[in-house]
Length: 150
Image 1 (cartoon, helix red, strand yellow):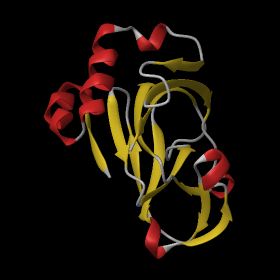
Image 2 (cartoon, helix red, strand yellow):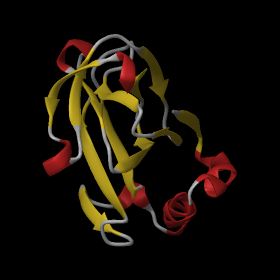
Image 3 (cartoon, one colour):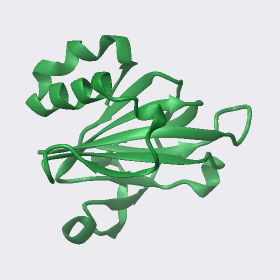
Image 4 (cartoon, one colour):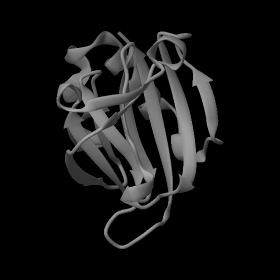
């Protein structure tokens, strides 16, 4: 897992060629003005999902991990708490990897508040629990999620 501010995005271009394309797309488009939905950038190799919702209590969240995609989650508006854990230390309770590229897990992990204009990169070994309310309670957020095919 990597967490940083979007002003530092160029530091991560070299980790994956599609990271550069994703962050350049972010610079060239006003994502905060885009409607929720899916936007293809490089077909199934790299696409963007714009999401808008109210954050939820931790008890309503669940751990998830992917096999075929890396997530770059960027907070466009608001603050969201996100959980993170090494997937190998959690127990799989539902496996939807073949049809939807995610599995649901159980166990413990750490949590971090991701503020507006910050991003988190979750690799397949990084279980994550997104969409959680920060300490001050549920609030509306808008988030961009780049899905980067491995």
